[in-house]
Image 1 (cartoon, one colour):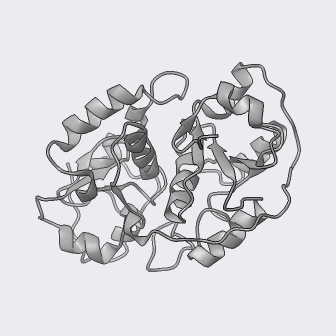
Image 2 (cartoon, one colour; image 1 turned 90 degrees about the vertical axis):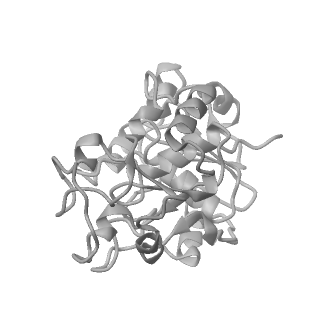
Length: 282
């Protein structure tokens, strides 16, 4: 069977949700209420799905030098993947209740680990419920997986690399946060408002149509081509507040056939750790 590598529909997932080689990972989360996602998962989820917590499973502990959700080491993340039941031959499906914005973090992290067979459930948990498929409650676990990481370090850039790119017109840096956060009018999560100088803004929710589903691939391709102009994808870098929702742009771009853009994993919350780094408003 051809693996699913970007997006999967509920009708495509349904015949496989009991398949032992498929691992469904529920990533629902609320940045302002970190316990809500796991609690809501327990109230109802796709049968057989396991839960991944953004702070505990999809991030390393933050330090004074990092952003809010630093990447774990490949070896540490491989241990997490094995605990979730994921092996190198698993078809992974990630889902959430936020249009894929948290599921896309797991999607990208698996790509970073060299695992291509991972897709985000289009419409997420709500699409599963609307379809009328069965629902499970409580906490579920899969048999432990066996995962050997093959990290692709070219998929992200460091803060040092970002500093060196300031003013380089050959690159396009895309801020995935809400426009009012980009402009610095509000900042609900980080102590400094604004954006990285020279970056352009496309809110990640612009990738969505109705019911938390991605826009058609052709429309996304048109919109990103208009946004990026002649800049090749390999010279496009996306960021957000902490390297989470910016992964949604990478998912949407790959779904649209635009491959090669990179993640600034530390994102805004790491950028502002050093007060000497420039900040732009407006």
